[in-house]
Image 1 (tube, rainbow, N blue to C red):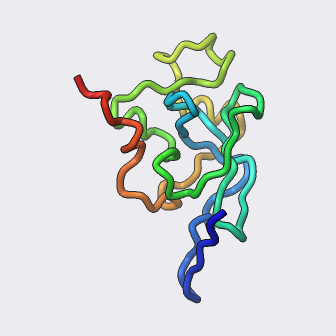
Image 2: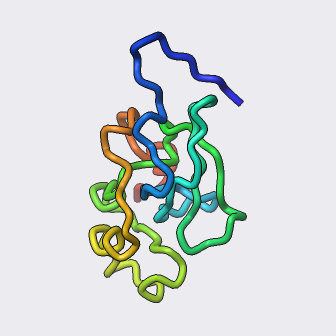
Length: 130
């Protein structure tokens, strides 16, 4: 575990992250998925990611500035496929809409301002260009 230290007055990496907020994350197979913040560890400045619709076998801890996590809508802006939660819309990726999903789940997205990285999913895009 890495302990992130910040000087006084400087915000911490996890300050804007809250349990239950939604985001996009990359699973261990490289799929971009709908995910939820399941826990926030302020001491070690990390968040616990849970993939919606899946059991906890895929959950993982990561730094909020990791290339594995991104704000809601990132895959759409990068023209990448987003896997909806298992069983949601019968897996119909084409008709998944974040606004409807957030409303149906009474959830909110992690604010874009919470993410400090300049590029999202960059390492996961290697080798995807034809």
